[in-house]
Structures are given as structure tokens and as C-alpha cells.
Image 1 (cartoon, rainbow, N blue to C red):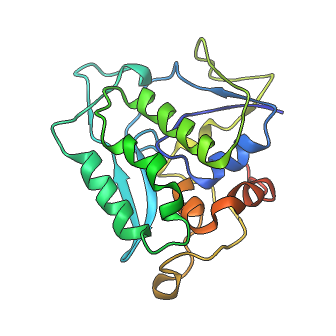
Image 2: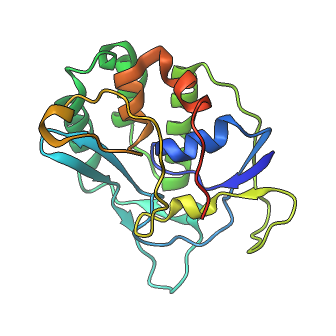
Length: 207
């Protein structure tokens, strides 16, 4: 199947379950930026439970702004804060050190546009997973698509579709229980080389 999906900040597990099963992945890059979505946020499992990592962006005075035109607000030291949060949450996980050197540069070099940064994060994750996907970008925005499966609903952080994915061991699950469908980073740091097998064995729940 071919799918259309939003590039998000370290996509959650549902995004990757959809992508690994796709014949072709079309990234939606012609849409308008919408607040409170996974375009600029991701969820990890920290010592006190679910933690939202949010990338601050510069909002246009206009009502609508293309996703690809949205700039990151770098006056805030968000990259440093996000990396510290990842260290605190996952340094005791089985595979954090295994992927640390590949991921750390993302939090050291300043990024200007949120879409470009998300695509770079996606590329690094695919390298970590040794995953090759057939990826292209949308050329115009289509509200309704006919020749591909529309997974753009997964970008919505506020009305998230419940997913019944298999549980895996998480660092703080003894304290707060299992938390599902977090960032791909949570799965990667806890499952390591088994991450791809896990993704391929799960089934995505559609709305």
C-alpha cells in the first residue's frame, strides 16, 4: 500500500508501524501548520511519567502558515533541554549508549525550519534501524486522497486514535506502568535491534 503521512518530531510508534508496512511513503509537506500536533512535539517516558518535548516555533501574524515555512524559535535552549531530558529518561535503558552518537548531533547544530529538522530526525532514525523506505513528498495539498491510505490523522496529538500495540519493557514501568505509543525513541532505546521486528508485527488501528 501507499500512504500519505505527516513528518513529525521523532514520530510515535503508530507512525512507524504505518511506514514500515508501506510500499511508498508520501510525506505531506504542503499543508498548513496547526498548533498542538506532533509536528513539533513528541512524548517520552521520564522518571515522573509521560513527558512532552515541545519544539518552540515562531508563529506568523497571518492566520495560516505553511508547515514548510515555519521557523524554529531558537532563542530558547530547547535542543539542550531536550537532550538533557533524553539523558535523564533513557541513560539507564539497554540501548541508549548504542545510538547516542548518532542522535546527539541533532541537538548540537542549530536548525532553522521545523519541517527540515523533522525530516533530518527521521533520516537518523532510519539509519539507526537500518531501514530503507521509498519516500517522496507531496506536491500539492489534497484534502481527500484516492490512491493512497491517508494516515495524516496520526499527527493529531489532542484526538489520538487508541492503538492496541504489544507491550515491551520500559525503564520506569515499575513506577508508572506501561505507557503506549510514545516516540520511536522510547522503543529504540528499550528494544534496540529488535525495534524493526516489533514494528513489523504490530497492526495500526484506523479511525
